[in-house]
Length: 280
Image 1 (tube, rainbow, N blue to C red):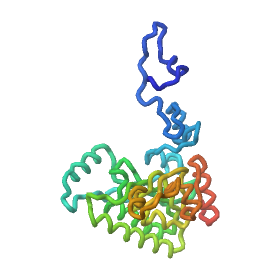
Image 2 (cartoon, rainbow, N blue to C red):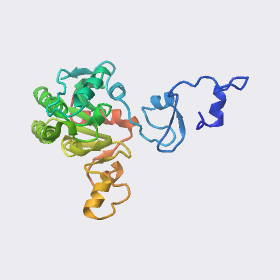
Image 3 (cartoon, one colour):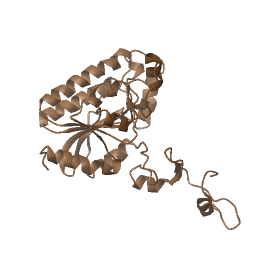
Image 4 (spheres, rainbow, N blue to C red):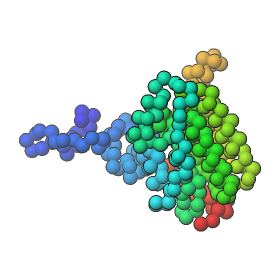
């Protein structure tokens, strides 16, 4: 409560000057402007700071709720779950713990409608081992593209990932080739793949399907890249430019088509789908 402005603190002080109970998570400090933001107002603004437009990371459910039409999301491939192919210490227990929390995998895939237009959608979940790409993520992405080819539907994937899943070793690395091949086949079928890069999109995901979209959209100031900045600087023995691996820098260099504010993303996607003649 110490960080709150005096004007807000007064709301939680009774007449006898004793503190009222402050509800948990009612306020959040914005990493962009360091101001205290009222959480319900932040949620109404789609997780974008109303003061400086900093884009907070939001949950898969929040993505589904604001991108897709109400109650239109129909999950696919949820029966495919991770195993422990290498008997990696603690991995099986980690998976079981996440499943008990109701987290299914590092990507959720399914049918949805966007302003009445039927689409296939994948949203990566950073709460599941930092959205890392293991065998199940690769399989679900590949099947999503196959489904799109079979039904002539556009595919939209929202990426947020720390990279390949180390607990699956080379099995995880295989998914880069697998998803890239699936994206190429989908592209050859003349259907549309829209890739949305959020903070962060790194490692094996950025080096595979995330950068193979027909249209690549990034959120403002999103961290996007393969290796970390310090690793690159140590390797090439040079100081990298300011803003390196941020969305705006990549847009200038032609790696992404454009940077889009989250609050305008839904209407932008609808326009893109209409331009490509996808019907309601």
